[in-house]
Amino acid sequence: MIESLVEWISVTKSLVIVPAFFTFLVSTFVLYIFFDIPYVNFPEYAVEHLNVTETEASYLVSAIGLMNMISMLLCGFLADWTYTREHIMVLYGVFIMLAGLCVAIAPFVESYFFLMVLCNGYGFFISANYVLASVITVHILCLYEFQTGYGLLCLVEGLGNLIGPALVGFIHDHIGTYDFIFLAGGSGTMISGFMVLLIEMYLRIRDDSSSGTDEGEKVKADSTQQTFMLSGETSNGSARCDEENRSA
Image (cartoon, rainbow, N blue to C red; front, side, top):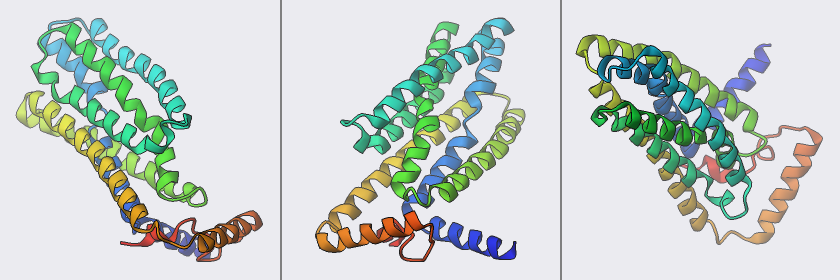
């Protein structure tokens, strides 16, 4: 048991020090701090400031869920489509930034109809996180490291969800208005999406700088990697799909 724990700590450390993956973890943590604002605070805002009934306010959450369903199908298609699969991180970053924009402009909405439009937009764009987070994890790391990497990602999501609602409630109790919450939540969500765009830029620059690597060495490394993966061995240096991920 102790050996397993030591091995887990070692593998976890080796993933956390990957610059791109660490940035993605931070991005996800920031996103999930503000993730529940539309689900929790939009209905409250509608009842208190737009003078709608609680039943009508509940339709806002239903709209988010409906658009989630539609967008998840679309994101799944785009993740596998030949023309877009190479740009998944750009798609993710743009969608998350647009979701943040839907939250940030909520204080300026003065009708139930337009708040419903924002909820539909948020539900549509935020679904990129549900579908593409696992794809991005594999893209940054590799399939061999996906299990541990995705576990860390889920841990970060849980921490954000644990801290976020309590923090938002604390701020509302002391400020007494939703304006700051929506602006801060929207800005934080947009920053989260922008960080993923930065990861995409970093990976492309890194790949371009290493494009001169001898092709024969790449083929040999890939062959060795496949041999170890098929045999179930976890030898250091062969279990890594891309050692360049470890570079600073």
